[in-house]
Length: 617
Image (cartoon, rainbow, N blue to C red):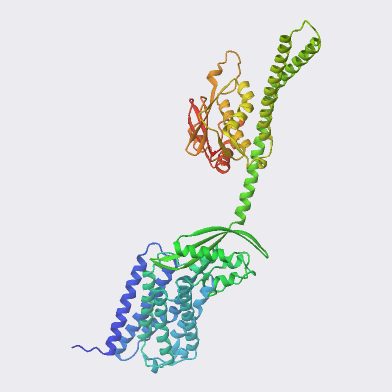
């Protein structure tokens, strides 16, 4: 059985650790896309390899020739002086992901460079060593060594602090990542303290081997948890900068974590502390219904599905709307806790309100513009019944005069009296019919003139829609030499909830578009009205009523058809804005729970469909 001396074991450990970190160095060098973390680890491992080679060479020389070669000592202390700074920069880059190498970072090299120069000139002043030895108990340090040692320990401690603090902050104190970094940090720290304070007799082998083992632990964490595969951004720093506030609670409703955004949202109103019960914290915060929130959390825990609800909070200087999302944290089959996410939607709601107001203004302008077009037709449509009523009144006046003259006249028979009364009755009936027509016409006009707010909750039938359309479009159809054919395929009357004026305006707009699809009439002679046909067909699909406006005009180009209801586009050039169809689509969707679509073929015509929800009468 071969017995190895302690000296041989030290060589073996040194060679093994050097080979291992050399292998890690090769892995890092082969990585194509390197971050600052890659480069600083390359420099750290390179310094450790230099340190290891220096220690091994010095010990080998000493074993062969019986004394230390100061050349190898100088090589040792290149690693000794610069490794602590490299470790500090590793920690800083790990914490900050990326740094700009400003003057303050370059200044960190001042002491290592000074230490190296002092060591190289040590024979002249003995400030670094009075007596050098390979073992700790035989070393006698010079006055400068204290500066070097204190600075090195500060760098090592700070570097390890950054690594440990941000590892714990990112992944938790008991994560495998944190345990690996903690273990790796402790080994060289303990060995260095023992060597410097001469508590035990330790050779120069111990420190570089300890640092090499630490690097192996760090690298194990890096490879295992893919630290270098992605930017090592601090998770807490990232979540503190997101725009949404959040609280994480455990199964006992205790606060586990939260971000700075949440604190900023309720600064000075409620104090959030880790380990506090969330409901105890919210008792003083009366803007939120605690019972309601608790029931939501319990439901999320039970169903394992997220819940989102809107909450208005007005307290002290906070007057905001929030979308609150409660989400369970599930790992495998285990429920670990709950995330409560608060998204401030105050600005979004204000913008939405502005958009709605602007849409209402645009719709109102469109409505008034269409009224201007309709007024000529309305006056023309009302002129006929008014003239007819006037004729009936004149006829009644003549019949009344004739009846007075016939009273007491023996020549006028009873049949003559009946004939006069019958003619008067016919005229009165005609007057009633004309007044009924005018009443319907005035209702149609009122529906277009009245503000939309006063009509939103009114229910109406499809027959009322048709009466309004027929009256309002009669003049435009006639003056443009078109033929409107209305076909109602629905047997029963159904109710439609919403704004009758808006729906009439939408369908009238489609009919007007169909009129314009045939082009303007320049020559009114020999016009075939049947060739300018427009069909309005009403039919049922499930729980909906569909209004179909069909023409045989020039159609809609494919490039416009694809975005007709999504953008303000038009086929009319300067004569159109594209607002009509764009807003019509949104109104049908929102106000009538319906839909709009188009079927069109160029030079063959178009069919526009308006689908609205129907209800039983």
